Image 1 (cartoon, rainbow, N blue to C red):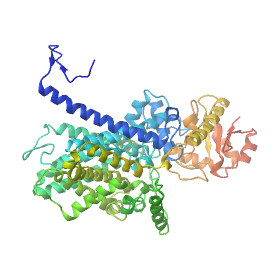
Image 2: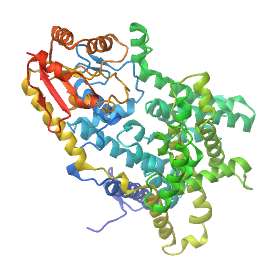
Image 3: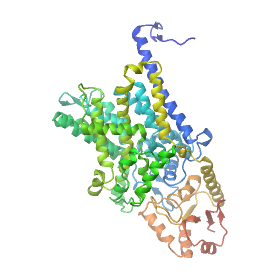
Image 4: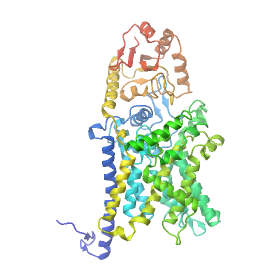
Length: 604
């Protein structure tokens, strides 16, 4: 049968050929194809850049540092139904993560849903990371289309947003930050609150029931469940919108929608961390839990140069050289100024939009008639300027950290908001100066512009260095898996293993040449054993582990044997742990991993 635009009426079984039905069918199909196109193109680029295949999905894209932590959290979520309590870690106690609250309920729910189909924690994390690419493109496209951006301009900007260097460079290591698809939705909330038709506001009265109230509440809950950083920044921008609305209309009533949304997001964050608050109330505060310093807000701020210069490792040598020269000049000023803020690069398209927003804010450009892009550009430029003043090195974020709270320290993470603001602005300007001009209606003219701009985004924002070395990752992963299987076969199921050297959890930093969270790899491959690592720093079990690990070897063995431990795991990269004396006291030969880094001593 040939395709047809005819719509069948299910009640009468008569084909409806009305002009209204045919008119509706065309735009709906075009919109559906637009969304399908942005998803397919984004994933094809991601597959190419990362070097993916179906055979590599069960190999960790990263197997070091925070990536290992998130794999362990995911495994615990799958085994125990939640992430806050894990009896396989923190022996002889039980690992609890209440001192390290995560307000990422949406991401945890997504991982739980994926795990219902995929039984492996590594694959779950990989898929969660990959799903973030099409989700970012779809939410970006949806928001831009809601505000009148044409299909070609929204397509270009959405592809560029999903493929922003931030996404690849955060990767699995910062898994929850890589899932930034709620950023466009948070921006939509801000633009709604800044509009003349704001949620909850009907004339000069507050109403909870109108066409935007419930969608706004739902989006605010999603943003509040997307991590404390993204929620905090969203509240900051809504605060900016509240000031913007008050200054424009000189009536505090028009600031209320933004302030109400701040309350909803903040309340959602509190619900996410409520178990931690209750736990702290019962067990008391833990000053060792997460140690922060106000100076870190300076170290983890971004610089305007990092936003607008080519990204590190750019595929074109001349662009990579520009960034390398800048980085060398910065490293000569002070240690630590180059860190995760290296992920802040906006790319060429984002940089154009960024400068456009600054120009709009500084020169207060106002066209002769209102309407797009003015109604969107004005609040976007205000929020962009706020992000710049707060997140830049030595900005207001540093003052907030110094005087209010040190827990929000990495203001460079605001760069992903700046990226969306900038690409949104670019899309509006492309409409005004390109896609809606008469010459753009010439055959293939629009398609040629779209192809050229997408090519610029892909070539400028991705690089061969982003590819995953699956061979090396697989070798390291399988080495540990094989060794843990030997350990499990040598002692009874349910036995406890003490891990040396002692390393505080979380965020211990390097111990010898061991990177952070190395001890968690034993748990990742284990099915039947309990492991000492993972007891929260500053709590009872951790204090006991710290003290007993410092005892003479004979006393150390006696203490852990008395507690029921059946073996000692040694990571030889962690420095001198008196392994020779340990072998003498136990009188057994160790199992040794194929790479020689790990040893296991069974306690007779």
